[in-house]
Amino acid sequence: MEEHYCWPCREVVPMVDETEYEELHRLFDECTHSVKEGGLDPDEGFKPLREAYSRLTGAKETHHDHLLEHRITAIGPPCTACGKPLRTPEAKLCAACGQFRLAARR
Image 1 (cartoon, rainbow, N blue to C red):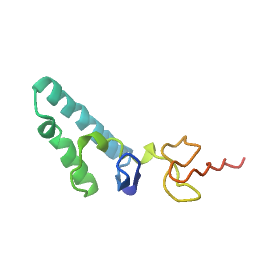
Image 2: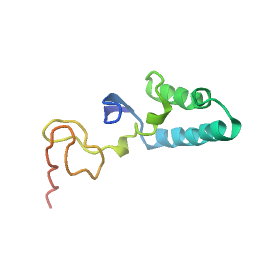
Image 3: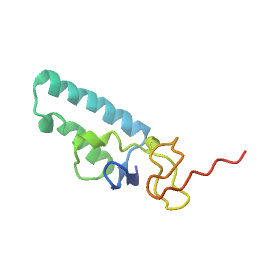
């Protein structure tokens, strides 16, 4: 678990690695099924997902919509100018400061 800036949340949050993400994604699918097919209230239906995220990261429960975005491989490298992560690994421009991503030297 590492902490990085999350663009949708606009704050630094714990981000999960791929192994942790697989567990959360499986739970997300199960919870989605419980809500859609079982008629559970979303707050109750997604409680296992929020609890698992809290267990993995030590962070307080947060809304289930953002949890799958808190994935290390989903963000780009740090901006060379401001240090915030680029929004995606493929991003060419920093959304925070407008700095163009420096091309890797060949």
